[in-house]
Image (cartoon, rainbow, N blue to C red; front, side):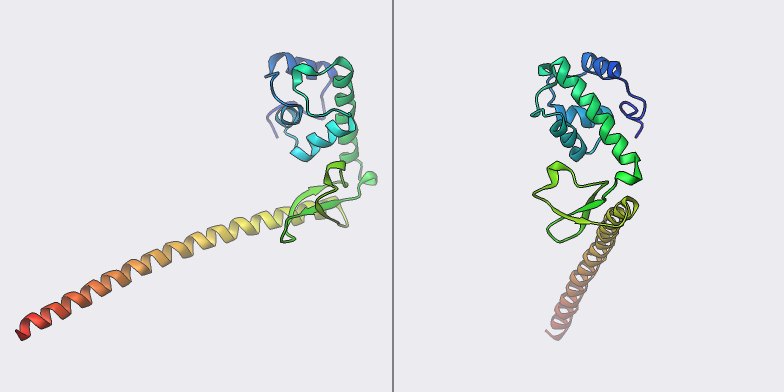
Length: 173
């Protein structure tokens, strides 16, 4: 993503600059997600590996910030190195794929996770599910519009029948 820092080119001083310029009342997971465009699971993993309990940015020590920087680099290296992949997919309660990861992260222990052959396969399954869901919503929306139109036509048809019946009765009188 184009917003935030380029995670492949960051330096420790870049992170320090972001802290000086940013909102220091944000919790760390949210801050990491914003400045690097990380998914929440990755932000939480970096904090877990850094042994930091979701502090506010202003509460960080220099040592904690260095651990965060080191663990960002470590996680990025893992994602980029196919040999370190053990790809998994997080499934929702209906077993639909909702998140792909290069490996099972520490914050995934209580989730429904399944292994897959490759990281690209995991991403493909998640994106296919998202596209199918969008397609279903669009399709449902179109059907809903047709149902509303048909219901309107039925109401108008009933009104016309009632009007015809009324006219017929008036003619008989």
